[in-house]
Length: 96
Image (cartoon, rainbow, N blue to C red; front, side, top):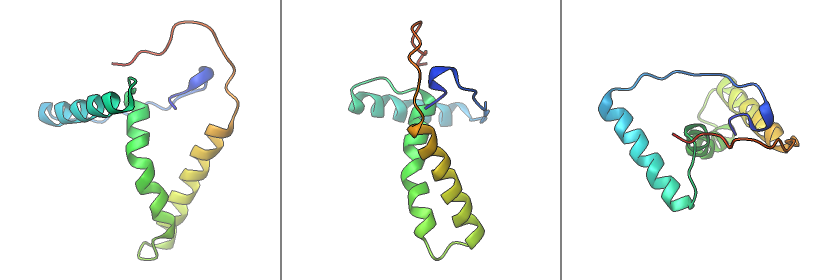
């Protein structure tokens, strides 16, 4: 999801303590093993948050503006996945 086919990306920096970063990477490594393929940080993070994001628009206990924001974010993810990604030969993306 992190810009296949040369699309622009938005870089986000999240500062974690060493124990938090180790927990993040340990869980990503576990999920990569279970998926049978390496998961980039971006792919893993989206995969981890998307199920919760999909529940939010139907949660009547949330304020209307938050449900609308989650709905708009989901529409963006869905439209990005629907776009055709041109095949570009070259080096595969790095997985850290």
